[in-house]
Image (tube, rainbow, N blue to C red; front, side, top):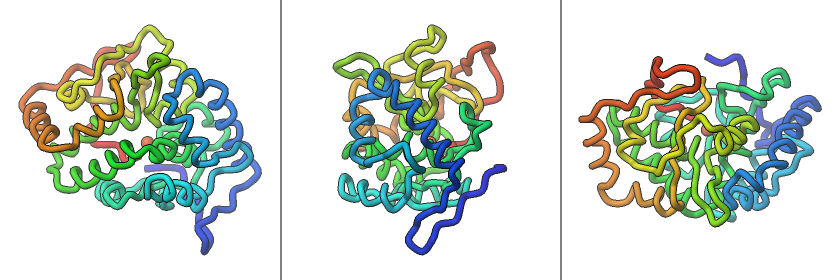
Length: 271
Ligand SMILES: [Fe+2]
């Protein structure tokens, strides 16, 4: 359920945002850009430039598509506020990124459980200009479409701990590439600076065995060495073998600040 409704697009795919909505985008954009150089991976920062994102108005899907097509052949598509897993995976397999066109209200600037257009465009679209991420996302969609519900739950964990909440080593040190972090000012600072969360080397089996909650700030982050490592997971039978093994093993315990267990996320989170 969501209290938000996607805004309608005109015949050319543009949305008529209100001045308040444009200001919300600008506030989020400017605040995030003050910290991006020190927290985001350089590929994400470059992706923001490649998409020509600006603070003055909410990003428009036709503009994003134009830049994505030129970079990696991806496009964006306006969708309802929440879509089914099958629609999400199908769109990814078609190199199409779904974007709900609403933006959060000013009262929810800092925490939003639902993916709004700032999350989708600022958080995810910049890395879709990177060839390895672009190809990974398409391959992920294809793989999920032929997977069982049990496997899809584990694949949701892979998506969660990489595309949404992944960290990566860079020449300048640890940086963020997960769009779920980079669209949140608080979690951007927390992910690299807070002493609580574990930051562990990426291990595919461990990722597939680690449940998550969508309503908590992370207690563990998995760290890639590079994007080739992520892309290689979907080559050959690496992921199939890892899924087989992970499904035979128990889940790791949940780890969140202030508590040690709770109800795990049981489905992949289409965002
Ligand atoms: Fe997302």
